[in-house]
Amino acid sequence: MLAFRLTGLPDSRLPLYLYCIGTHEQKVQLRPEGFPVHQLFLSRSAGGELKIPGKGSWSVGAGQLWVMEPGIANEFYPHSRTNGELGYIGIGGDSAGSVLQSAGLLHTGPRDLSDFEQFWSRTTGLWHALDDGKLGVWNTSPIIYQLILDMARSVTTLNETDLSGVESLSLTPDYRESDPGSEAFTRALALMHAHYQDDLLLKHVAEAVGYSVQHLNRLFHQRHGVTGHQYMQRLRLQKASDWLDEHPRASVREAAETVGMEVNYFIRIFKREFGETPGKGIKQRNQLKGENIDTDAAPTL
Image 1 (cartoon, one colour):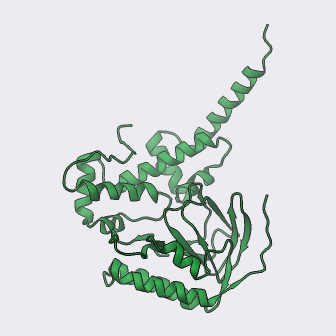
Image 2 (cartoon, rainbow, N blue to C red):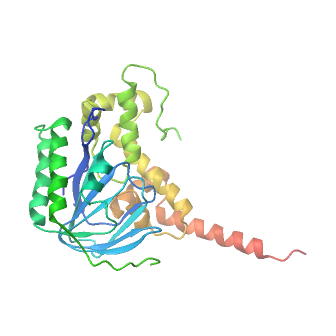
Image 3 (cartoon, helix red, strand yellow):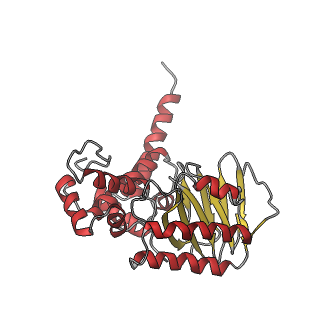
């Protein structure tokens, strides 16, 4: 699998640019707030169910493509937790939406993509070129434009069936910094807060804002007393804890999946951070909720 890969800070003159790219094992994905930019998804060898609240749900199969517009809540549930890969390409820029619309790709639901392996190979090749430093954000713009055009020629609309109805550590980015490097550091924080659910590596955050990993870690130590990795880890744990407070009947696995973590690792570091396992916290919440219900239902004497 290829880690979540951000590109560098785009030039404002670029009407279309690559924002992120990567692949991962097909897993549950819950994005109640959507994603910051347009995303192209490639389902390689297994499938699942795509749900868009208020619009419907669709079965996703191998060799298919679908596109998500920015800010649209969506959920994906794989048929298997162990098989299949999902590729994703994030596309930003003022012209991203109009280009995708003109190409006929802004279509709700999945489509078959002919010659799928060729597009998968181009996606992974682009990731490696970025990771090896062979491409910059300016170079990726025409590559992404060509990729969109080629996909438009290769997609075929499915006969879709609508299945509608189916804290010492501050975890808030500080935008008040005034030193010369604050803008880049603020962008690093914003990227981490936007992508805590993704397999985001600190080195890719650093590259995206023009820092080395060592310098970014120094800034984290100076401003938050932790490394960048520790900051991201605590951010994910806090998000998971908040989610459990809002969903007291949820399972530990669901909580781990909401922040993109493997469940056993999640349990281990959750206990280390909060002094108890997430399962114990769920039990206590449910007991407290039951007591509150009993109290509310008790007759007044």
